[in-house]
Length: 187
Image (tube, rainbow, N blue to C red):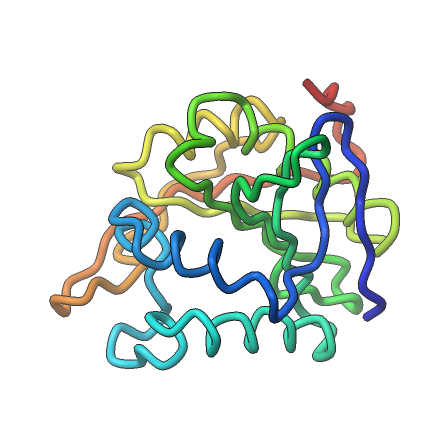
């Protein structure tokens, strides 16, 4: 998949690169990001704590064609604000998932809403995706609010859908958005 940058008003979405070590380090050490965005297999910590390894994976995902991982930046200052990713892209089924997180200093400012809306529009248009899903822990009301503000309809609860480091699981809300849904204005 060809890497693209997306100008999104006051924000810029660009592919992560191997020079983004400092924003990766900050993100990987943030307790809230660790809490909600753990690796899918709790016993596999490879690349989760080491920013260089984590970046190699983010950059490599583009080449595999199944994930498009963007660093979200302030378009004026270049300040890194977070991540938005179109994940598990399946061009045969015209489906994908969206994931996102923000650096502590960027939270509560509408950055995630803007980034998710922008990446969703890109996936619908540039990739021909028809159905996007968004999953988040039931106990994460901030992510639920982002889903609602970006037009992702709540479809239900996926029980014990996300593994925790202690061997337990948490429930996740499943939201979706279709390319045929009414457009959501970018804030």
